[in-house]
Amino acid sequence: MKKAFLILWLMVCNLITGCAQRAEVLTTDSFQQKLSATPERQVLDVRTKEEFSGDRLPDALNADFTKTEEFRERVRFLDKDKPVFVYCLSGGRSQKAAEYLTRQGFGEVYDLKGGMRSWLADQKPVAAGSSRNKKPGMTEAAFQKEVERHAPRLVLADFGARWCPPCKKMAPEMNRLSKELAGTLVVLPVDVDEHQTLSQVKKVNVLPTLILYRNGRVVWQHEGYASREEITAQVKKFQ
View 1 (cartoon, rainbow, N blue to C red):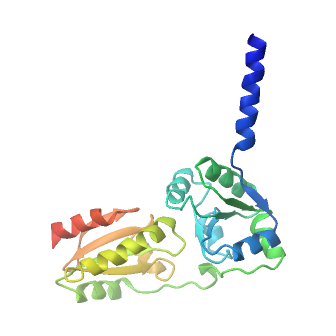
View 2: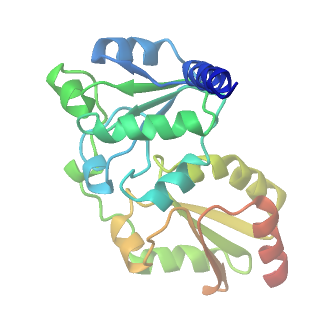
View 3: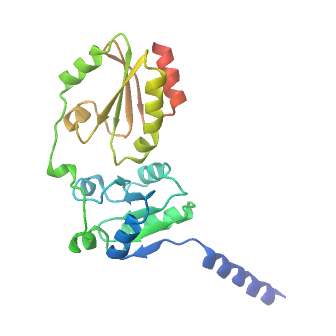
């Protein structure tokens, strides 16, 4: 009886393992073709910030796999119903990241075999990183002048980046908020890649970072994703 139960249990385990969703590993050619054929794709670069600042795939989002909390937090803002294309430098990190994504319920996950090294070796298209064209951007004085120019309305500085998943997720809500509170609030987007010096001065270490100003002075600051309701509550508090 025990032996029969053990055999049945092993059969069930094998069935579950066989049915489990797995990431599909693609060569550079297949990866590129699949990308081109998928309009609602999500491209995820799991390298470090320093690696990401160099060559990267077009429209890539960044979530450093070596920083567990950051990685999981950023991945949380991806759409599980849309395909995710994952890559790293040579394939090791992306494989583990892809496995994590499938365990979290992402339906379609594609892993680039050989990573960025193979992509570059095969001369595939890339988006030039910010490290090749450093941009100091707006000075602190110019930023302060811009903030004060909108008084007496409140100014919400939204520090973010195009490659930041929570920033991308929050963008439509920020646009809606800007329209709803147009008479009270001015939303001032600040791309950290375009305004690196300002971002450093403001000590922006987490994306997105929101800083609310009233008559040129900081009255509220928030790191990470914030809902439209949370922001609206703060605006009403200081208007």
